[in-house]
Image (cartoon, rainbow over all chains, first blue to last red; front, side):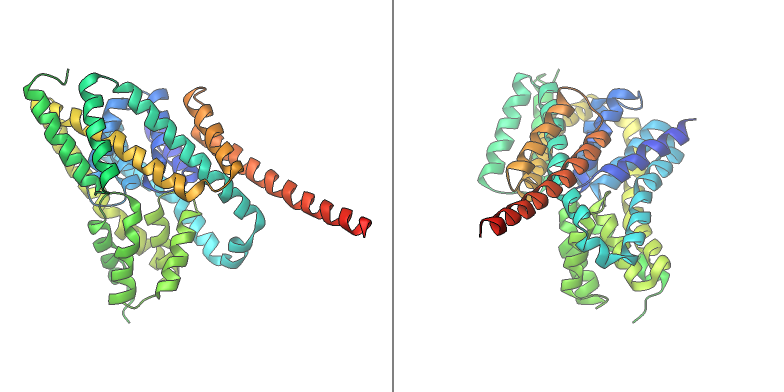
Length: 176
Length: 192
């Protein structure tokens, strides 16, 4: 039952990912490694497209992953289930807002899970780096890194530059 | 002020359409729409929801929208807001994904994706760096960072389990600190 499985996977992403759109990536990466729904390569493409399409990246990637797994209905199931935990929790919290904000355990939990989420994302970054460790790729990454150190840009900017370089490298047959 | 399901939906739909890139740009967008144009909430309220949106699991933009929607009109408002913020993202991806299936085999599309794949590594790195400045504040958070990193990359532990472990570690650590402080005080009292 693919839809039930999709629901469970994306509901648990919605429940455990903290810290914004990219925080869902470690979970999606884990799914790519353990379920044969999509490959790491496809996931990378999804992240790129999600970064330049309207809407929150987390929603984009969930829709995309659901669509890749089982079409339109899959997309609908994945998107709904990634949002559902937020919906339930936010409404419950709205009713007990003061208790939530001042609760010691809640504060302690947030204090610890933020760096954990960051560590998970760092692991994804290293994995992606290792997967692409070829000479032309590293050369492009070095250029992008240098640009980002000099001045902060929009994700759209970095992706446009890398798309152009990719196109150019394709003509020179460097992208094999 | 008109706070019908449709108006709330439309407002968040607009924000959802303008929302490009990382989730953090949602703050200025909501500021412009909800505070300046509609006057539904004030700046302080919005900032509070922004902080709250990050302390709830899930996608920050969705969390904030549900918070604001619920404040405006209860369950109806929350539903209108979340549908509004999600629908543009959903439609855009369905459109792109359908086209992509047809063209992904073309060789120049492959080349573009090769380049863009490298760009994504930089984006993930930048997102990690951004999270680092927001979350690593002392020795304990630094230890949690490396523990999560090693468990995930070397031992392939599931992210959900790592999050649960970190929550447990955080609560235990804070408890120990408070009891230690209490213990120190008792000690001081005994000495004096």
